[in-house]
Length: 495
Image 1: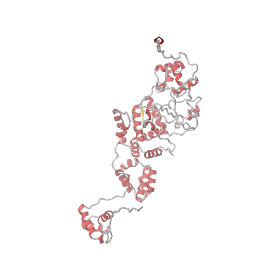
Image 2: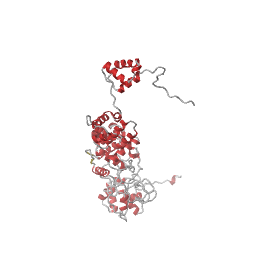
Image 3: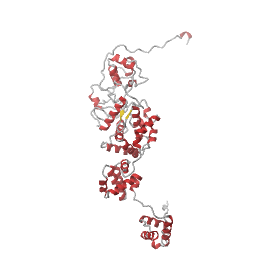
Image 4: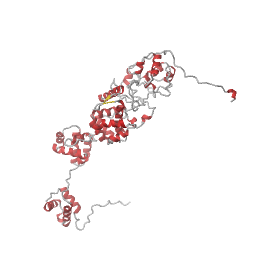
């Protein structure tokens, strides 16, 4: 290149936004998200959302495809100038005035994927939609509630939001405003099927109520959860993270299945085979069950899941400040308190048994010994809500006996309560040695009833038949001509 071919240049200024109203007007719908409205407007103008943002609104979405969530005041004023929609209505379509904390708008925020680290991915734009809402729309649009990370239930139709195409089962994802082609948000991007429909799974009132409480808490930065005092939104999300990390992080699947059976039973969900517990809806059910009686059910969940205690649970939550940890300890202290002692201590123990009543009955049917079957059936009846007197009558024992079993279980655990009681030997070491020499010296008297009588005669102690048999096993002499071997290896077959 010659020196004479060089010449000075200057960078062109950015293209100014349009200074007149757009030729078309798209009216925002009730509860619509700003991203959905911009996408519909761009499709009506036969532009891509990226081009519309650059030309009309002076916003380049390549750097931040989710700029619509909290747009600046200047951007809202320019959009209102070009479209004729008031800035107040535009702000209501965003999360500008909503609180924010701990990635709370990330996709599947209270599902299992967040706790496995998937919230670090900025490309995950999963969304749950209500097919009935789309079927009733003249022009389908996405609600602002659906764009929230933890929505799981449609507040209008009371059905579970679906995150998959009903035809190809493809995961539904909402595109960002950096899309370079016109987009229809109401069709599957893979098979082209309309997502509108009339099918939906009815959600229980507990999940719907909890979601409404969380929505109000995010809007007002003040949440009043059941069983807790009024919390700010960051504390609410930190509490949710601690409770759900207990379920999903380093917990074997069989323990989680036991917890889900218990939740389905307590919330009267019927058959829980169709519930996707790893979704936002599943997270709402888990939280609704825990928060309904946090003091008792958190202890029950820890026992069922074999989860760690409070300090280790708090350590599982990343980026948790010391101040927030102390605040959560105060909130969860009643639920982590030690079990009550005394005559009513069995109540808390039977409530926190890892196995539900149906599992205890199935285990009883597999037991070999009648004593263990009897106790398992009694514990299952009390666990399912039967009074102690009725449970004792159903297995043929007195209420006093069943109370004794329950207290032993509360003190020593389920396995100890299933074992036959063993009395401690009243013989001293010297007395046991003297009685052993007497047993070994006279083979004719090697019988447990004779041993019991000799212990009474020598020491005035009434031995139990089990203890007498144990002494015989240790000190008995073999018959003449037969080698007495208490243990021998199994014979091996020659090959």
